[in-house]
Image (tube, rainbow, N blue to C red; front, side):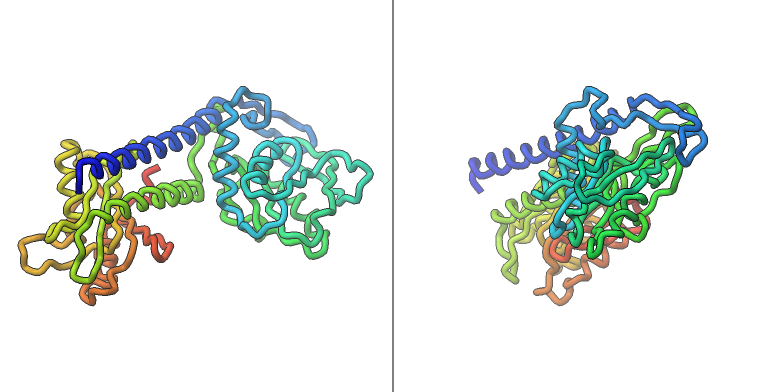
Length: 375
């Protein structure tokens, strides 16, 4: 491996770390915007809740919000939605901004339920929120189509239920799922489905007794965030493998270790004769990070770690990884099917102490002894 090759590899590693850190910063900005939202309560306005507490949803166009945040919200929400849908459906007015970005991301038409019918064929329904209700009209152009419902939030669920009931009156129209920016938990529990339909959202929100907006990432957002990160870091682990020597079974193996607190790639390695890629990366970790015992990491490897060594004084890589509790996640490429002694045994051993993502099988194996996600 030449100095120029090392330089190019490290440049790629550093760029990815910065890009991912920027993405996390965007999520932090969105959370801060929610947390800074003013909170009010209203009484007896004809809604389903006698005294309804609400915060001013920050992406409705009443707040000076960085417009790039809308793009990120739309991108993440679109990642939940089946690509075979034929239209995005939302309701005026707060759902329109994010639904527009979702529709653009997917390249699909956007249909908006409105408070006027424009003398066109429509389904009429009553929007019933926690603090008001009003008649609405949904164009019947979606009849017989596969659609996804997108809105700003679910609170009492009245708006979304009314939309679903209206769509059910259109023969052959299939609702593929319900997707929202946030699920406000003051008036209902978190859930994985809504009226029998797949339901995903990005943030959990709750108005505290102190009238503060509490915000956390939903399980769905955590999963898609880390999936995208893992795919990008794993690609760089494969780049490391290009410099690897070949194993007896013809494998080239690369590995890298990422710091979960700032997404910095703190170590990388590849197979060098009797030095395995994971072993190489762990050795670099301990050199590069004097405080490694106080941090948390994810390890990426292109091949299932070994469970034995041939009497050469080295520890099996699965044991090396398990002996470092600071490595919380292990992302693995291929199962070592060529070695009958390994062939899944490395995965089983690691699963005793680690969360695993199997890139080849598109599976996540969670260890009950560890936290689910870093964020």
